[in-house]
Image (cartoon, rainbow, N blue to C red):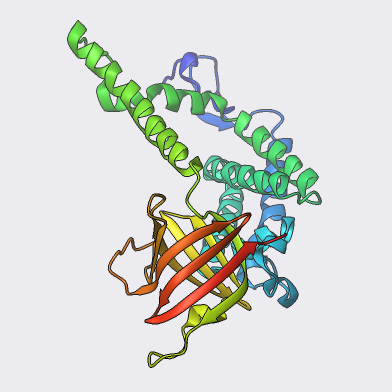
Length: 321
């Protein structure tokens, strides 16, 4: 069987035969040793990271860090706590690292392994840079260099896939549209970008608008009138956070216990209602935790109303950090 010379594969493989007109055998391209070295080195470098997660020797949070308030956890331990807080997520990362390394061990799957490894390494690099994990950065950059070197051997195949992707769906010849349909297509493309951007910009404007009572407050004093309804749990609150999540949220702190609810405040009548609602579920029919009025007192705040049927008066001052 005769094969034209211009049909020789562009992936670094050359074909040799008994004469120039007939090609019956294949031989590796020259200079494949660095390529092979990078495949095995990259696989051997990444494989321990995957098994470290499988056997629980990575993403470990010391008890002292686990007991810290979130605002005091910094840099690498914050990242480690996040990744290690969900074992299933850690397992997925581990399996992805092991799979990418394993694919690099075989010639036929080396390209798939390198593409998979590229995504993993870029994510690791971003975490290291933005969470100030400086130790592994040099190692990650070397691994990225080896990954890029492997992919460079497949550049013709990758470019061919990218160029031929549209043809595989729409055919080789582009379809011709009229002016109206072409304008509609471009309008659809522009809307796909502009509408979400506008919606998120407006949401950001709403979030930046100050909320009534917004801030972190310390309870200076709590005066409660004892009645048949018993003592209100709000009377034991040490701090109150008025903030915004999906909506206005009031968070009550007592020691290391935090209780979240939603609130509404009328800036005209100065009425305040706090409900036993979970703002993540967006419910609005929970029982009232507090129903009354608020008054600004200099830089402080006075809440006067009823909590669980019991009259309650709270004097709040801004919390100094």
